[in-house]
Amino acid sequence: MYAYKCDACGELHHPKHFVCRKCGGTDFTETPLEGEATVLTWTKVYNLPEGYMKPYLCFVIARFDNGLTVSGQINSEQPVTGQRVKAVVGVVKEGVGRDFYGFIFEPAQSVA
Amino acid sequence: MRAVGIVGVGHTKFGRFTGSFLDMAASAAKEALDDAGVRPVTGHGIDQVFLASMGAGQVNKISGAASALVDTLNLRPAMAETVENGPASGASAVKLGYMAIASGLCDTVLVVGAEQMRVISGWEATDFVATMSHPEAEYPYGLTLPAFAGMFTRLYMDKYGVTEKDLAIVGVKNHENAMHNPVAHIKLVPNLYAITEDEDANVINPYVAEPLRVYHTCPVSDGAAALVLTALDSGREFNHKPVRIAGVGQATDTHVVAERREPTELFAVKESARRAYEMAGIGPEDIDVAELHDAFQILEIAESEEVGFFPKGTGHLAAREGKTRVDGEKPINTSGGLKAKGHPVGATGVSQVVEIVRQLRGEAGGRQVKGAKTGLTVNFGGFGNNVVSIVLTTRERG
Figure 1 (spheres, one colour):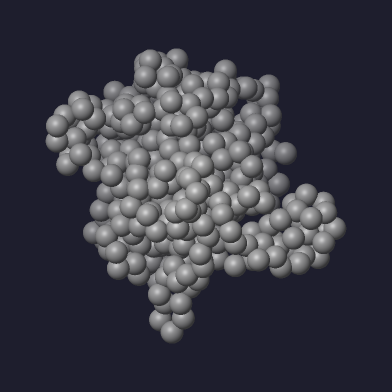
Figure 2 (figure 1 turned 60 degrees about the vertical axis):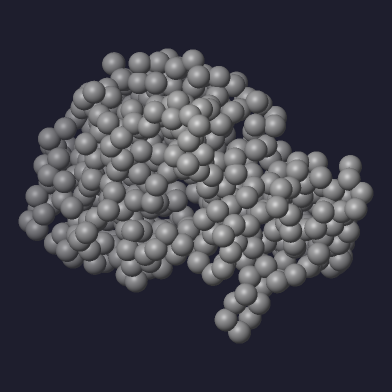
């Protein structure tokens, strides 16, 4: 999983954009998006769409320490707002002949 | 630009439609044509048909559905286009109808919104609606519209002190309104105590996407709604005095919800309403009645703030005080809203306009807002990434 850093001004984007939101630049460098983040909000969803063979799943919006904010699944029964989490890349959906990868957050050791 | 008014409305009963998609769309269209006094086949004068639907192609396997509709109604050789803009498809079609007439290309336009979602399973319907999220950063995760609404609700609760009971108060109010709307999907009023404080509240009103519960979210509905739009200078006679489209505003926001700088703001709602007010030459204080897109009850609260009815962070307090009831100072969702009237996604934006036209004509029966002259609709696409607002009025052009 990558962040896309604008070569002109350094603004980070995820997912990929073709034009920088800050300066209009059009050249980007892929930067690995990993490490710890903070949970801004979360939900536990009980009516999952077709293709997820689970009774429920937890999701978060989390902010990385570099300021970038993303959505992802979280491997926790009861997330907490403000919780420190660690970004792990895993299979978020099993497809036919193709799996989909994305962020699956794990509770971090250090709790803020 | 030429002034444009609405002279005909039609609306199927929302809920489960057992006939075909085309039957449903044509039923609403025929009712609107009859209401306006337009006779199909000879001399109908319909220059253009816009059919709004999010899932005609994906769910019902009908591509180019407007071509089928125009022929079913024998309105050939009218121009025809299908409009897809997620759950804002309906208001987008109204906007395109407005533009077609205001530009001078057309004199009279038929706008129809139709969605038939109950022909697939609930899981498939949830997946279908989720396809409007970002194809890489959101959809593959299993994120759905209820998931985004749940996370948005939690942010609102943390920041402004909104409670689950506030969401239920808005829901119950809309269910009460729907009891007076013959075309509403759900005809029952849940007991506020039973769904919030009773010892069985968790069973009666279970979580869908924490902290959102069943009575904080809209149902899955089939339904169609239709409008006849005409140029006010066309010289044609219709059955009804026109309700003028005074303002149309639309705005987009980040497609990825997590990218929003201020996650409790709905920028596209605020900006689309601002543009619609500016075009109409009015402000939020001039609105007598509003239909706001309450797919989730938190959205009615947040939108009532973004369109300028109440200060940010106080929409839930206004609802608690009864200000948004039919007899309140700012009546919202007199139709029952998406919560109780139902939410056939592509039809919703057209249905909202139908309700405001009925209010401004004084035809809303037990849910009538006394003396309503100007109304607002907000049709919310994606999770607020594409929003269309429309101002309607019976007042003379200022």
